Length: 320
Image (tube, rainbow, N blue to C red; front, side):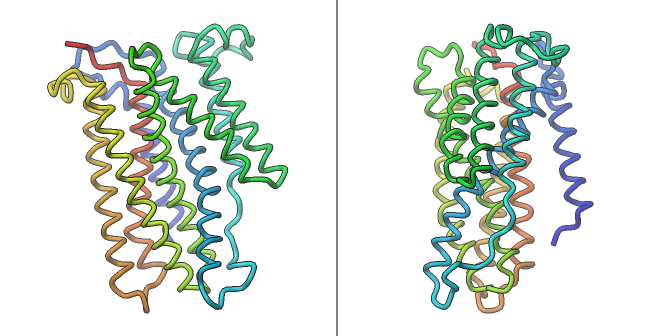
């Protein structure tokens, strides 16, 4: 298992990137720095991570149930499941969304002093959508507390839709942009969240190595199609967003995207290595052997999420 100190160090690095990323990306571009860009990136990273954990848990538990039922000799109730993280993730996502709504109400890149009035939140499109996202997470938490965690998929899907709408406020082809962002974000969330839950479930199934390997293989098959969807929608969105190839290096948005593309490539490489390990020696494969490449994949996916949040705070590339 990865030491807790290493996990804490990775989280610390990602937090630092979120807080300083917008200023670093705009350095030397001549673009105006967006006030509160670092805090916005951090809060939206928390929101994305909450989506990953909760939707990944909903999808992962269903996948684990299907895998356990397909294996001969598995107990009727299936192997032991890992503890639920959904409630904590929903509350973290709600807090981040409320903070984003407060920043939108303040309008100066800072959190509003005290609790803003609903009229102040509703006065801006950004604040209204953030408040809707907070309500989506609240409903998701309620579903968990009512012991109906799968019902949470509906309000969480609403959160994803709200994020897609927020990303395209004045697009003349808004429906296309919203659709691409919707599929792109959903693919990223399910890939990352599904991997988190698959690894947690494999650890809980350490006494059932055959079931654990079957679970990872089933996840890998689904992750491939999520990767295809992520790349396709990401490419289409980039072609719509960037006015020219020069914008890749001359704008903060383009620079951030280049780093994100490199990390997506690293994620794909780690996934291929994990797949080779899985197929090479199934009979003697241990959890530790599978964890090494997938741990790097998960770390890179965490960085991809932070950069995705940074893209939402970075200035839009100027048109030619």
